[in-house]
Amino acid sequence: MSMVGPENADQARLLCLLRDDGPRSRVELTDALGLPRARFAAEVERLTAQGLVESGGPAASRGGRRSSLLRLGGQVRFGAVVLGDGRLDVALTDGELTVLARRTEPVDVRLGPEAVVGRAVELLGKLRAEAGLARLTGVGVALPAPVAVRDGAPVAPPALPGWHQFPVRDTIAAELGCPVQVDNDANVMALGERHAGTGRPFDDFLYVKLGNAVGCGLVLGGTLYRGATSGAGDVGHLQLSEDGPLCGCGNTGCVEAYCGDAALVREAVTAARAGRSTVLAERLAGSGTLTVADLARAATGGDPTAQMLVRDAARRLGQVLVGLVSFVNPALVIIGGAATGLGPILLAEIRGVVYRRSTPLATGSMPIILSDLDDRAGLVGAARLVSEQVFAAC
Picture 1 (cartoon, rainbow, N blue to C red):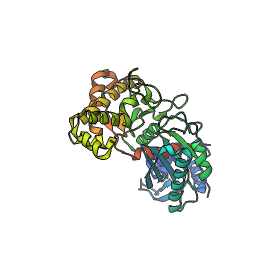
Picture 2 (cartoon, helix red, strand yellow):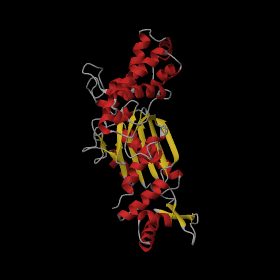
Picture 3 (cartoon, one colour):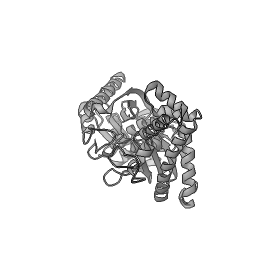
Picture 4 (cartoon, helix red, strand yellow):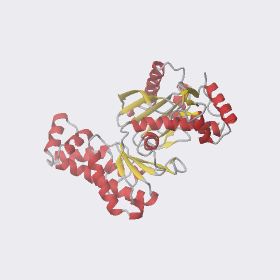
């Protein structure tokens, strides 16, 4: 049974209500949509014929004749692909964007887009086959890169050498025969927070994504804000100083060159070689290299030099957030993507800078918190991304 999507705005609103709130009674849905009963029943019948909705048993009685529940169809299944920080994460979700199955494996993006995207397609195919699906309803993809959403391709991505304008969306769509949407990972994770995280009750919030690539997703007025050419939120390449370290984008002194994982590792190696941290020096001598996980273990273990490096990066990030908070006036700032253990140290320093330097009107009662979705934000957000397309009225 092929699913072609809603035919009008009322059907689209119904699908989105079921996606966001789960199974609801016909009576509740009729009230929420403000439709005459006969019109509502006709729309439900059309969506049922497509396999997009199905009955889910009796609803709780509100007096009188019992209504039945409606839910999204059992064949509505979204694929989610998140690429970043040396790994490929692929998942299958239901229509409510709950992760049903997941595959994660290490990946080297320098192998090139053909190999990496090809592997993502293979994993999606396996998840689809294991679930007994003829096809996926849609696939959402998150890349650690600037993405021209209209084209479904990364644009001059510092973190993905050789990927410039590779047709990620069209390649996956051709292989799997379903709608595909591609976006920057910070945007996708902001969507995940909006759907299932701390951002759910808020119409205006910032999601700051840390890791190798640093970015920011903006949810404004309840929807993701991308800007005129999908470039909004690229805070990783704001310049903090003209004579700062070289960034992967080719400029100097960028936020990412100070606060990204590679920058933290660079400073950790320098500190180890200079003898400022015995813990880091021993680790470097033993393995020949350091990782951000090594720095995190040293910092959470109480090593003062490691903690200082993390706090320095957090202070610079906090300075950027002062400007963003004053300009956007969000109700909430969510920090995600930090290496395990670094979050609390980063958060304390960021809060100190932002609350000290921002105007009372801008910060007010604004919380700055760590994401509670952990690495699920990208998977849920990727499914949400493509669901927005599939559930839009044709």
